[in-house]
Amino acid sequence: MKKVLVAVSGGVDSIVLLDRLVKRGWDVAVAHVHHGLREASDEEYTFVTRVAETYHVPFHGTRLHFQEGGSQARYREARYRFFEDIMNKYGYDTLATAHHADDELETVLIQLHRNVIEVKGIPETRQFGNGTLIRPLLQESKAQLIEYAQQNGLDWREDATNQERTYLRNRIRHEIVPRLKQMWPSIVEEVSKVAKQARADWDARYESCEQWIEAYVALEMKAFHVKLEDFGRLPCLERYTVGRLLSSRYELNVSEAMEKLLQSQKDTGTYHLTGEWFMTKRNGVLNLVQRSVPDSLHPVQIDSLPTVVQFGGRTISLSVEEGREGIPLHEITYPLVIRSIAPGDRMRLAVGTKKVARILIDEKIERMVRPTLPLLEDASGRILAIVGVRVSEFLDKSDAICLRLMVK
Image (cartoon, rainbow, N blue to C red; front, side, top):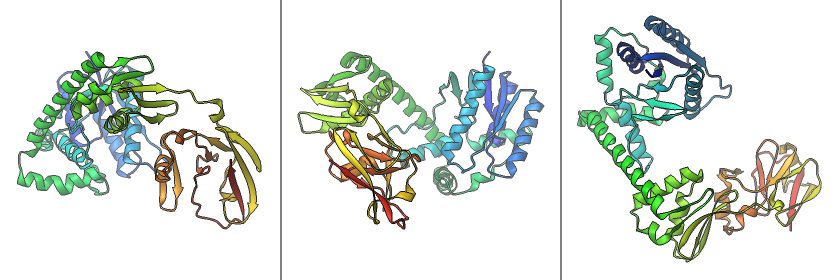
């Protein structure tokens, strides 16, 4: 028999899930996360502990501590990391969560709002850590779960934050879904059916595209190539799916690169992915290639000023001068590092932070040059400058002594 860890918040959904699984004779345990965000969380933790005792099942709980606060995504990541740790430690092979059909309706609306390609709701099962995540209540509505709880005399707790309109899901739940239900009473059940069919369609598409890859893509350990003609014959959704599958296989996001090189009118082209990895278009073939980073692009640490360093064939002079034209010295945390660009790099400008990649596009820096450009970063992780291109914006320019950069 499978050992199942049940995520129990104390709300009606998870209480119904636990009650049903226990009554079915499943080997279950309770996992509860105290997020530390509300005074009521202490009482809810105690409540869920007692519920586990009532059902004579093991209880695993934790409290999260984010001193600087955190987003919904950060709390969710920590919550599921706790679940995975408990599963590994105590040998549970399945995690059960209480997502239901109303949750799925909200998810579909969010997916439509965000214009995602795969609008398919919430999967009934998926791989989770070394085991499986299941959602046994996904085909039932919130109203059905409340009715079950009332008929069986179950007690639960309501999370007051579910009423807040700060988050997109809550706004959809309280402002949009009630109107949709009023106009279309069967919307929860019908969207649940459509989403289930959409998942089946996407599963079939992924399986078909796996077979296409095996037939048409020359796969190697660290690279692949495919004929443009073969890739271009695929319908749009199949090209997207092939790109996703190859991205997963090589742990690189190749989808956008493949599509842009395919659509380009030029016979040749290169798309920098990250670090040493590039997609190229040559002689009617798309190639994933790896190019070693030359020693000249290895990071250079700077412990004091002034100094002169070599990076990527460039000579960079860092001097200290009086005046307010440059990087204020009081803004700098040593040591400094000169390095190449990495995915996700952002720099502060007058309009707010902006991706370095976007800045280089706006500055019309040639694609082949971008990987060799030096960034100046301090010990706090702040990018002070794209050397020779842009300097970060500093709010406090009162310091009359600044760092000046010169590059040859």
